[in-house]
Length: 263
Length: 309
Image 1 (cartoon, rainbow over the protein chains, first blue to last red):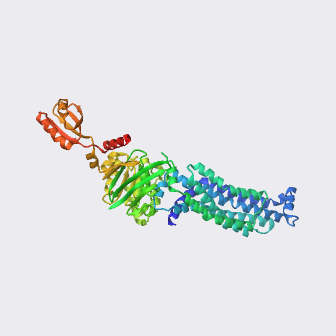
Image 2: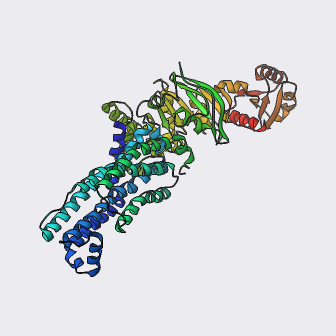
Image 3: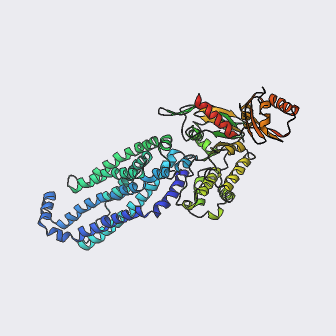
């Protein structure tokens, strides 16, 4: 564990210094945690003046007494799913390059020649992606909650967040999802022989998250506590499998001999 | 005391055999030169010794422990200088050493002392806070060597230790490697620099997938089929060619002005006879010397023989 900590300590400094990681995260946070909720909540009155929106609400929820409250409740369900974007995105920005960069710089062989275990190396590498994902997701959750509550309080006179669904997503589903995507990205990084290929595949790995967002936005289903808990249980069961797979796939021989060193 | 024992070691990558059935022993504090052409299996062997890759068959015992089941221990007592001195370019030379050394179970104070010791020894102390990416190739090589030594390993596996170094630094590294014997460090030295191998190694192993020969330099020289003698006469050497051609086991004669270089089959019996014959015939001999083949000459002969097999 101590050796995993050594790797984490060194790599997290590099992550903090890397603007290419922080810039997209800041943009996504600004859009999904500040701009969109403000637009939906503060603009709810004008949205309700649109006939199509009224028809949509009537179709979805029947006749309602307080359409603004219903609209905001619905919008919160949609925003909830955006909470999954950051925990999915951060590992895909950090983890795919973790092993491949070591190969490219010829630093992996001397690192593997130290008394480090494969599991310690992978744990250190995955913490480097998972910890920022968890911290940023939590910050994102706090920002989104504060923004939504202030806006909702101004508009409706009450603060709807946090609720149980949001807490499950922020502190249960997101960390589990981050872990799985981190390990998947590390597997890709272990097997790749090219950094761009690793990053490309890393971007594809988070496609299922976009699919869920798309399906919810299309109105095919709405996340609720039952779905979220079922999702957590399934993903939790996948965690040890993906960890085992990562350790198995991280084959020192393959990694060292398939990789062509820089001249 | 045996430090490394390799028994019938074979390594295959798919259908390609990189190393075939090699066996050797290395004693404690021995410098073992491992020589061979490109693709001979030197780096593969070093990787198997350092537990980075497993053998296809055969057995490696290091410090009395099987290397398949004691990877962590073996890596803790070995220092590896890889073929390419990969360094984290965006952190300083000092931080590179601190990072790698922290994986070994050594006290912090020893670690810091060793970092300072090796950085000073290899003239890198003044640049210790500079990013490793700004180092020259030679500086990176010295930093990589410091990395291999930082935990004071019992066994040092060196793949081309002086590659990329200027003559002064290379000389310093050679003196350092020689000095490791006193500290009981066992050195496995892969090099293309045959003069270096000749000067440093207690024994050399010449490999081309299979082992061609393991011996000390003097054993190799004694077994050399083409032993030579150099003779300097007071007058023109051509005058004595016929005398030298008499059946003393002389294989070839090359003359230039008053010098003659003869290749003799059995110098220990032929040389006294040649000298006597020359003196009896009134030749003025300024100098007569048995010239021993260099490791380079022997190596090239052995590799050539292997090719013709």
